[in-house]
Image 1 (tube, rainbow, N blue to C red):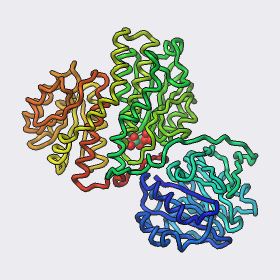
Image 2: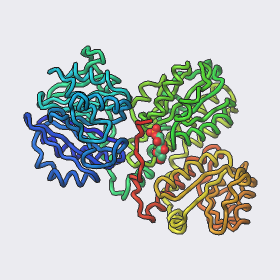
Image 3: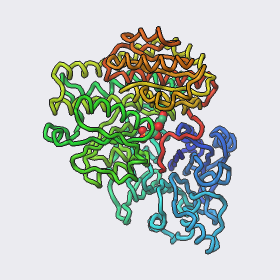
Image 4: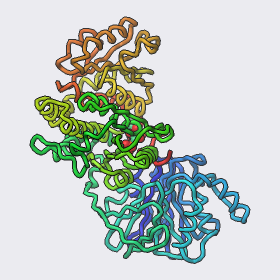
Length: 608
Ligand code: F6R
């Protein structure tokens, strides 16, 4: 998705903006640009392609003089990727430059209106309408102008703006799209993502919906949507900038896979006190737990897959009906929910538009909401009734890895806590599961120490066109995530099926050479799974098993096997995920794919 960085201070803005944009590259983009003010002189450099091109065009920033500016990475939605369609967009009179994330839904109508008033447009984008509307409505006071502009916009936006009338000043506003203000010493920043400014400051303020920020090098003032000056409390982001760098790994994805033991420890360990699970300030006590009639777990993509693992775990151990819903479907499904439904919202970024909309709807319908989120102070974290942070640290690769496994771990904690409160597990079983969860980081570390087998099979299967993933129970949930990882980064067509479903249609696709990854970690379902594997082999399909050491007899019936450490049946999805992430990673590496930035994908999907 698009990225924004803005700066006002005493240093040359262009270099700083380009560096900030490089930190946002991971979000996915197709073009980029900067606009910088030097007194009343506004210079804009924009280009399609990589930031390296922009850097070259601006001569590393040296050719663009000035100490206040805005920068943008664009992920095309309206208008093809091109120099003209890149941001910043400058108003027809050359006085206002704007960067925008989001979608202006009524842009066509506004554009016609402004053209009729004699304001020409240069691009095909929805975003340009903001710059032209600022020009049209400008009355000498940017605060009132921005309020009027916002009142005319329908859609979602995070906006950064500079004006030749107001040389040292940077303005920002937002609605349903993330934007933070970074507080420095004699310099201040705006950014769509902490990563862009983390090199310069750890102190941030989250801009609320409809609020406006006015930044100069020495001050930041905030205004509510009705123009009243407001105070906002900064928060500190203790992520280290080195966490947002590759640190010797060839890709962020591999680095993040290897960060999982720490991420899982940070998510789980501080919440286990003796034999108790202490979930921050989450309102879960015996009374509340006994009132829960149903749980809805909602997310998109991998977060949804984490939710499916959670469904299996919670239904089995808490005896509560759990629906796992795709956020984009939930919001238009007239959902059946009320105060007896607990809604668990899952999102790494905390900014996914569909998930945010689902959260708002669930709240509106009276459900209590708990968000499992990684990014602190993100929209979902702020709006949910309760939040459980996953502490995975910054995730830069577009394909989530540590984000997903820590979501699963957080769901285990929530599930086990509810089971304890509702007395649905014996003390011994509760202790077994808790010990199992605490052992996961160490088990993942052991897996990461030995990846030779995964590399071997990844090389062998890298040129295949289609891969199936099958599993039963919680292995089916893990298969869904394994298939998504493979397809999104290697572009191999991959599909996951509940193993028992094969015979109801999909088996017709199995022919000589078709590769199936069969997850067989579940002791209880092992022999059922063996039958499914044999059915694939009987059609001359090639089967690679992912199984725990205890189930290693599966290798007698398969063409290969990837072993995960022995663990409780209920907890294997975390360990299977690590194998499947590495498998996808090495397949994609073998195929020469752009692993951290797969085609057409964006890290944080802030549009519906
Ligand atoms: C896949 C992936 C996506 C995200 C999805 C939700 O690897 O990363 O499917 O899981 O876009 O994102 P968040 O968790 O930020 O809401």
